[in-house]
Length: 239
Ligand SMILES: [Zn+2]
Ligand SMILES: [Zn+2]
Image 1 (tube, helix red, strand yellow):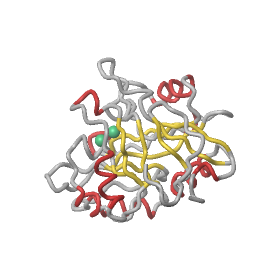
Image 2 (tube, rainbow, N blue to C red):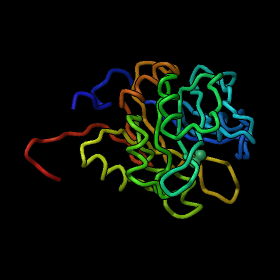
Image 3 (cartoon, rainbow, N blue to C red):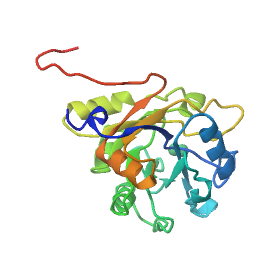
Image 4 (cartoon, rainbow, N blue to C red):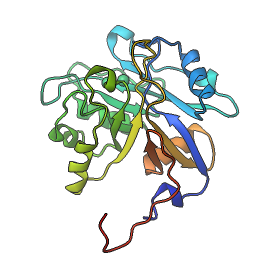
C-alpha cells in the first residue's frame, strides 16, 4: 500500500492524457485545446495526435502553451500493425521526444509500445472495450504501464467508454497495470468528449518531468467525478 498516491509527497494535479487537435482529427487548435483545459481547472494536458502518415506523424509541440500554473506533456496515439481481430493498434504514449521516429513498415503494436517505453514514455492500452481488444492482445503488448479504463469519446460511438472488465480480468490473474481515465477529446460539437475522465497525479512539482515520473510510478488515481482522499485496506476483510 506504500505505493499509493495518497502516501506520496506533494499534491494532486489534474490532467487529461488523451486529446486530439487540428494536427490530426480534432477540431480545436493546440493552443485552443490547452486554453480550454486550463480554463476548466486542469493543471496539465497531453495532446496525443494520431501518429499516422496522412497527418505527417505529428507530435504536438505544446511547450509554448505552458504557463506558471499549467503544463503539458508531449505524446501521441500510436497506430501500427494489427490486433487479434485485425484492427490497427491504438496505443497511448505520453512523454515522447519530439523526434520519435515513425513506425517502419512491419513494426508491430508490441514493438512500437516497447520503443515508446524505451524512449521514456508512459504507455497505456487505449480504449480496449471500444475496439474489442482481446486480453491476449493486451498481454502481447508486454509490460506497458496502464490500461485506459475510461475513454470519454467512446460514449459517442458505441457506448463502450468503460474498459474495467479487461483490466479486472488481467489484474485478477496477477498482471500489474495502473488504470487511467481520459477524454480522448476531439472537440466535435456533436460529441460529448471533454471533461469526462481524468487523472489526478501526485507529485511535488507541476513539471513535465515530475508528472511523467509519477505516472510511470503509479502515483495517480483516475476519476470521472469524485475526489478520492485516501484508501484503506484491512487484511482479512473483503468488500
Ligand atoms: Zn484511439
Ligand atoms: Zn484518441
